[in-house]
Image (tube, rainbow, N blue to C red; front, side, top):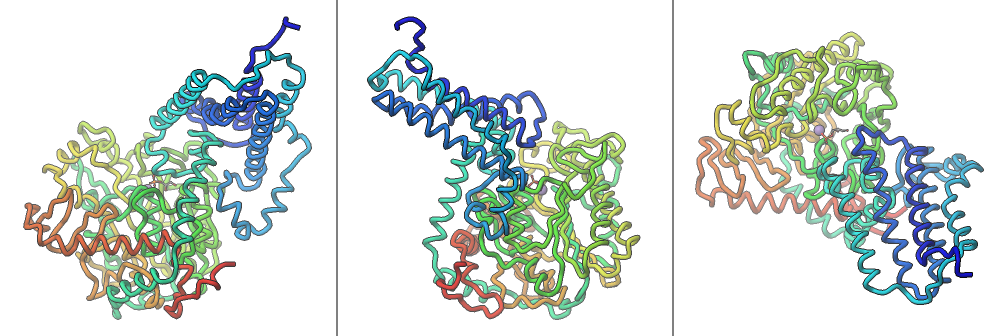
Length: 632
Ligand code: GP9
Ligand code: MN
């Protein structure tokens, strides 16, 4: 029967098209992915294609039609199972599966049962493409091709596949710059590179870190610990236990840099409430405090705070090492009887927080689901800070005391948009609309902190709390140096740029009475030792790289994640050694000893994280745990 014959690669085409369309339908029906514009929709639509072309395309190497068809059906069935597994998981956890989750089911208690409860008979539809493929193989009359495809055709086919992949990645990059290097959210990854590519990427990231972990042993830990013991300052006895037994509220001031504190813009005060705190009798304000974050931005600052270790140089540590063993501040305070929480009105999987917070021993994560975001209460990346603080304090009022809660603000985030009613000052005029708007969102953030304080007072939580507030990272990147120069009235050299990495730190202790401005040079790595000493928690044996900012012994040496550093005398930036006072280039030998030390310190921190070394460490005794006892 020569008539009605289908071309020879029809089965391959059926496999690709059915799985492709099914995947898109599953995206639309089974996951809640927020699509904001037609471009995102287009990316979502094309994102399964490159992977499907590649994996089904391998069938072109098979010689017999039978084995080709068998291969296609097996792959189709396997992919359907993977996608369906994701759907079932998503129904329960509203999140995409990641490898460590599959292997660390103990973290999730009854993961097994919960997944089986999310299965329905109609789910057979998720396998419709496999069925169609089997029917096509069975009933379509295909022109027979007994040989493997000619290599020229095959090559053309795979060039096309690569082109589709690059088109996909290119579009994704315009929508989400640094998607892969920052990899901030599983949902965002799936939305942009597709569920199948996402799994490949996840396998790559996880196996890289598993290999480093497998090769590590306790000996590296001994070295790191010796370094810590030799460099740790004794905490300030004067400040020990000043806030003992109080609730600890740590507020992350999104993208807030120190240059706005105490500043005016077009005769308008940018941060009136925070300015008043710098002169307040219960507040210690640190104007020379630096962020030390890398690509993990907010999450890196959280990592520094909780662990007093540096984040990683490449990629967000919350993602790459979310399953490590940590001895976090939350865990220490938990052992002291504190209830520990994070409050943040964003999706829980952002920065892998849901998983990382379990590793950090945080009792409860109040994510966006815990908040009621009314019409008009969201801007930029989510809920506005004022209603966020109002609802957060209401949640705190229900918490067991003493509690340690971290509030992550969100409004002062790029692209710094605001609704008209939230603009308390006018825009700046410069060539950078980003910088122009930044002052307004910073002003809004300031207002929201005032609301936070008022609410805490009203709910009777204020007196018995200590409130620590820090800027998480820069908000204005070097792309806006021209506009910054206009505002600052001076050129933004690498020296100035390093100084612009200062973020505000406020330690507010109601009733303290000895508030002042503390000029000590410090960084986010110092937050944990400083706070633990205030609360009277002994951290002598903790493996932490920072030191108590109030201590006489605290060394003024701040290392940035990219190797720049600041001391009392020199600032090292752009491979140039600057005099800290004058900003003039100075003798490079003055920086050299610090360059080596910065390298050493970052290296120890990296080895602890990459080797997951804290699993070998008992922070109570300061002793090594024998490796064989560490695995569950
Ligand atoms: C998102 C918030 C902001 O949850 O932490 O992220 P960022 O981009 O600043 O890291
Ligand atoms: Mn941030």
